[in-house]
Length: 259
Image 1: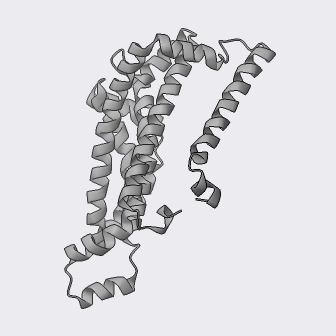
Image 2 (image 1 turned 135 degrees about the vertical axis):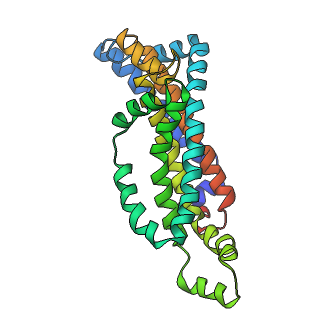
């Protein structure tokens, strides 16, 4: 944080807000000046009117999609964290699982999603399964890397105190790994939302952000598509911000949080 931001903390929020309002104004003026068809690019005022007039639909779609997002995020990140602890204790898993993990992390979601829909059905469970696949390996790699963050001198010091593996893990290695773990959690917030929305393109009850986007594109209701995109962007930003606030509260001692 700069000296000016310390003196006027509202500047941190006013600058990005002003920048965003300027972009929306340029978008509105540009569409009108260039006479761009609303089918190609509706102005922000039309999208805002659509959001205001479709709040019940948007809310139901949001709930359906986020049911899969939150379930998949919790299962995927939790399983990856426990697996990282097992990998940390086993050189066999380090050599065998991590290279396979890099391969699986590169799988295209557009190929995984229809398979999960066939396996788990059309409801939110198949979307949660896609989210698990997308979150597991980024979280695993970050956690394993974080567990290596404590250097040898610190570990040797714990050994001189006759600390057990559990005591070393809880009092030294997990605190040192916390920034890496939260980095994985933040990456997974956006991946989980993308995975759930893409999975809804391949089969879902007649509700959900992905279902609505694919349906309204076919009907040429582009303003509704943009309304869903706006809600998804806002929800993803709030989700990311909540994890970032949690990180700041837990890792307040780390140099990256001192500004």
